[in-house]
Image (cartoon, rainbow, N blue to C red; front, side, top):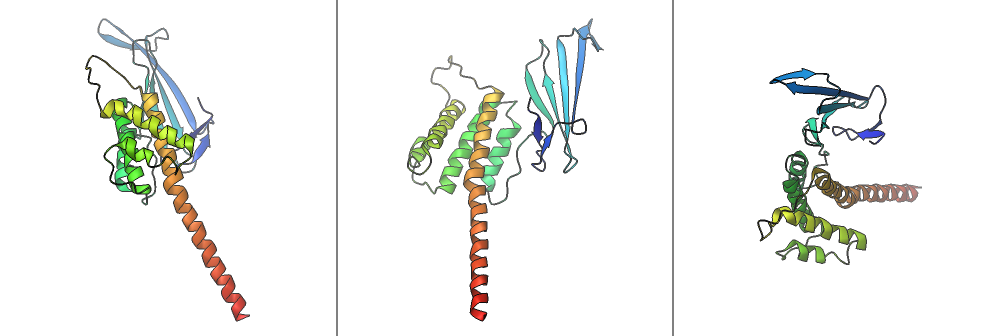
Length: 225
């Protein structure tokens, strides 16, 4: 586990200390139709993790299923999704698909991966202005000489993985699955692209405007002198 945690409410990164992190293991066993708690040899075990943000004071909580008779997974308790709150200049349709991908990453990783794929396609069309293409692969190919080679490779990786949910196999007996950790990695790529494409562009434009205004003010003062 990491020694820090980023609050989903305010994006503040906190160290894990006594006043910011709490973990409680809950063990129970079933016997004769009755549930008995605190059996340390139980096959049914759930860990509850809670994080209190020192910046906004909000609490984030998770349930980790770890018993041998339980599915090995982590379920967000509050908030129900760890979707980051991106600025409004990121198009609403992209933010909506991203937030839905985050919300279902544990319940339906394959559907989450499909939504990440759709996010990517929407961003390519909006940010890069790629039009007139019907297939995502063709849209990505339009970026081959516009983005770093490694990033272009990753865009194709995300497309292919997302295709598993978007385009079912012709052979219905061939099952290709995606686990929640894999789907979360795709979400992380979408978050990275939003930061690199939209947020960095916005911050650059802001800085350039500030420098331009500063230059105009400086030149105006020189003229007055």
